[in-house]
Image 1 (cartoon, one colour):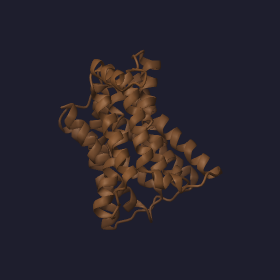
Image 2 (cartoon, one colour):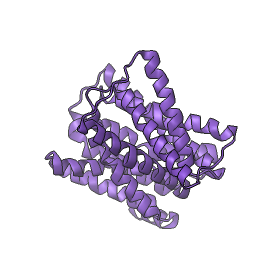
Image 3 (tube, helix red, strand yellow):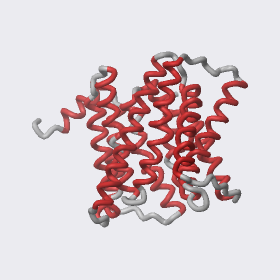
Length: 302
């Protein structure tokens, strides 16, 4: 079950970039995010009400959902989309992949969970692998004030994503399932972002083209309803630090899709990066004893 959810999350979120590209144009980015999560919340509520699986929540549960909505379905997306104006997508992917390490640290701080060595090693390998995958893009980007701003926003978005993971863990420990908390969180997140758009004077334009509507539906159903439910279920079942290794694999799927539809060419450094990413994946999912033995075997001091 965990493997199926993991693969589903990676495949879905590794392809949503296509739909995001198709969204650019008539509708402002924040408004597109509002449409996405408002519609996703509606779909989730309809499913939960028809199946009679909508769980009741007390005030504390709703407050946590407000915070989750702010972190996962509002600020997180605004940070990354704004950062993409100043820094290349490869650099954003590298920053986002540190979510594995941030989740491990936050799980230690907030839940007292021991930081597993294999998760740290696997996360570091994955981070190095992504660096090699995107090296041409990173090396060709000059440092500037805008670069620092973009990096700061990407890091802020990653920290918000990690905080949302912790909040979901809190809700699941209280017996609330991700479908219910996602429905409320998406509704609250979309509401807060809609308020921001209104205060900022951003028009709520609508693009009725098949290109825009099709991409929006992909982001609503697979990208949000299925993707976030599968991922946050993994957070509850496997722990936030192991589930977050998905963030390292998303760019890998995206590059493979790009190779098929956009002519991306694999290079020797990129293939080495691929090997490191997959090795990191193996390390993250090894049992602690086996991972410790592997770490000892490759240690230069032995």
